[in-house]
Length: 299
Length: 319
Image (cartoon, rainbow over all chains, first blue to last red; front, side):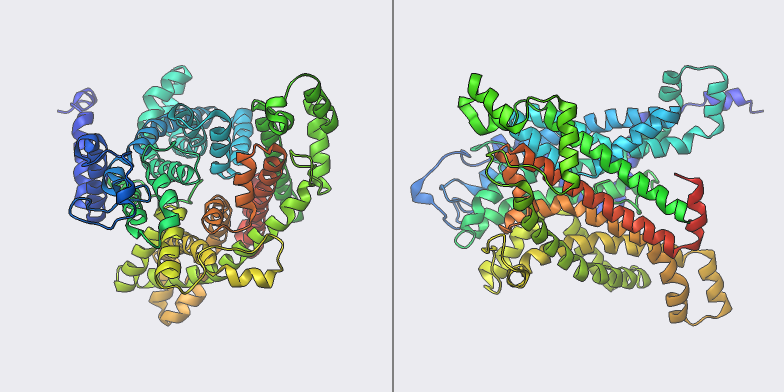
């Protein structure tokens, strides 16, 4: 005899177990395994690089300018005689730190607002979505650049700026995902029981929208990294001599004919991280059963 | 039908109106104005007041907003922060150059993307698909400045085939521009093609799995006739909107590509204007970019409505 109460009381797999299952699923797909390996490598290196880097990243030497790869300097030196390997190893830390903090911020506020208007609907929904559309009609780099010029380029400016502007498109995603859930019986039941909105959001909506938001967050992370590196490439990101891939590519570009290694090293590092995140995010979406095939870039 | 088009136009106008408010309010919220940027350290007391009176900055915000919008409608964006040139003059040529770059890339990229998208979908999971899709994923994930830099390194530095930077001034005739822009066009086309090709591929695969295509197959319709008559019209229609969104999204990427190639377009002007805190110019560029975005999407929606009999009636119920 199985009463409904018994089946309800059956232990649900813990969040940790479920996460482990998802990771295993990602790793079982070839592209997911490559992506996961790349991302793990970059994250580990970001933590370990201060101890791994063979040279001081800011040590300038006129004797070593634009030297090719050698036993002492595996990836050669740049136009100021700095060790390219050390700078490349350290060059992702700022980008990873800033985007790793800003992405959860973006998903959290955009997600909450999206769920709220998805539930409430009506006039608020109409007005807010028009504003979101208006924001989306301008390239994000315009906002971020302006903020960087006016308020400075430190992490304390970039984290809130990226977190804010990348949260805007999340509103749309969360709202659409909420619309799929709101019409279902358990939400109607919760409404009929007279639960306040915040309870409905936290108990009924968030658990059902969470997967879509997590996948969205993974994609946003790679776009945010892209914007961050573009920003430092344009000279509005980290300030020298802090090593950063975007800035390194921009610096070394002028000497590309004499020292292509100084450009190629950060290019490979940055590309491998972004491709890694994308592959992981795609496999993550498949593992959670979310179809992002029709996803349009940047929206 | 006409009511439907009018409604969509109204929606587009609402977006533009909202964007202009956001741009104006955003610039308003920033510390400092055109005068403090222009006068820099000398921005105090009498000089500041005089400058503000000259530029009309002492009027209330709403009056200035109305003035700005009124001017913009007539194509007059005021003068740049240093008060020397009219913004319409500076922006005009740059906008043309960006348009040349984007249009060339679109003319090459869109047909190429549709072709490759259909090919990869029809030969799904075969060698062609795997190769093309891998290149496409690479092209669309790595940052624009990375792919542009790699293109310069390969074709300009190593092979010495093409010029790596554009050295012409902003106001050369279009034919002179075209000779210089091969590499920038390739850089833009790569990203554009990759995005659209992925969408077309997905769309074709979806349609191939649909019931009516199954039906056509069972009826014994020849394969290519089925592809051209049943699959492509249905698969490519939704692609119009995706193409529009991709083009609009590309505006941001264009900014970076223009900087890498030193291309005298709107994007580079935007970066320069932001660095110089030339807010009137930034406002004007932002408004133009938003107009392009809204315009392209509007055109795509109208095109889709005209081409699809079902949407013509369906959309009447939605706003």
